[in-house]
Image (cartoon, rainbow, N blue to C red; front, top):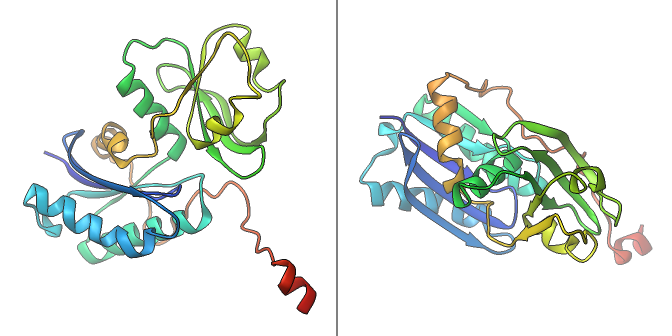
Length: 231
C-alpha cells in the first residue's frame, strides 16, 4: 500500500493530498496570492492528521514540478526535498500539465479528443502542451503566445479541450467549433494520485540532491517605475 504525500504549488492554488495505492484519501487546498509559504506545511499536517498517519509512515513525497510560478514551484519543491531528506523517503516529480490533463480525464472518462492544459504566463502567453486521451504527448511543452491562429491544425481535425487559468483568458481568441473550455480547477494535488502511484510502482524517483523545478523560462526580476526612477 503506497502512501504518498502530494504537493502542488505551481499556480496561485496551494494544494496538498495524501494518496493510498493511487486513490486520494485526504485533500486540502486554498487559492490566494502569497499563501504557499505560510500554509503549505499546515496543509501537510492536516491531510496526515485526517488519515491518522505519521510522517514516518509515508512511502514517498510527490511534487508538481512545473512549469508554473517560479516562487510557487520553489516553495513546493524545497518543501518536498526537505521532507525527503528528513524522512529518507524517495522523491517523485510530476509535470504540472500532465497532472492537469490526468485530472481532466478523471472527471471526463469518456472523452476521446485532445487535451490542452494551459497555465497563465501573463498577457497572452501561456505554458502549454497537448496530450491525447491516453496522455501521450502530441505537442511538446512550450511557452506560447496565443492568437486566433493558435492550434488551428489540431482544431481542424478533432475536439481540443482547453483547461487551466491560461485557457480561461484565451477563450475569446480561440474561437472554433472544436474548441471546448473547462473552468474546473485541475491544478489540484488530488489529480496527482494515479500518476504518482505509477511512478512509485516503476521506481521512477528523482535525485533529491540535484532535482530542480521545470521553470521552462528563466526567472526575470523586474523593477517598478519608482525603482527605475531611483536607479
